[in-house]
Image (cartoon, rainbow, N blue to C red; front, side):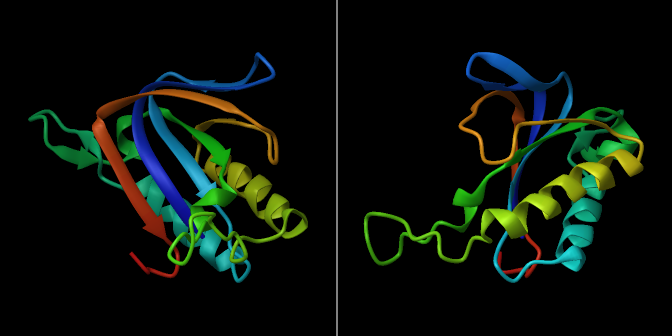
Length: 149
C-alpha cells in the first residue's frame, strides 16, 4: 500500500462540480492499494500517517503528529500510485489492486482514521475527481507499507 501525504491548510475534492469532501487543516492522503495488500498494510499505513511528526511545536519545529496537533484527514483513492513507467511512456498499472479488492480496503481506511477520533473527509472511490489543496510548508511525505521507499 502506498500513500502520498501532504500537510494542508485547506483541501477539497469535487466530483462533477459538487464538493464531495473538504478539510480545513490536517493531512491530504492519496492512497494507492496494491494487489498484494491486506489489513496489515492498511493498519501500518494508518498508524504511520496518524503518528507522523510533521506539525510544528511551540518552537516551530516539526515535532507533533496529527493526533497531537489536531486537524483532520482528507483521503483520496489513487491507483496511479502503482503506475510503473520504467519501461515505456504509458505507465502500467498491473500492480494496482482491482477495484473490487481495493474498494473495501479504501473504505476501511476511512473507518480506521475515524476510530482514532479524527475528522475524516474523502473523495469517491473510482470517480474522476478535482482535488484542490494548499500544501502547508510545503510538506509532502511518501509512504509504502512494504518499505520500498
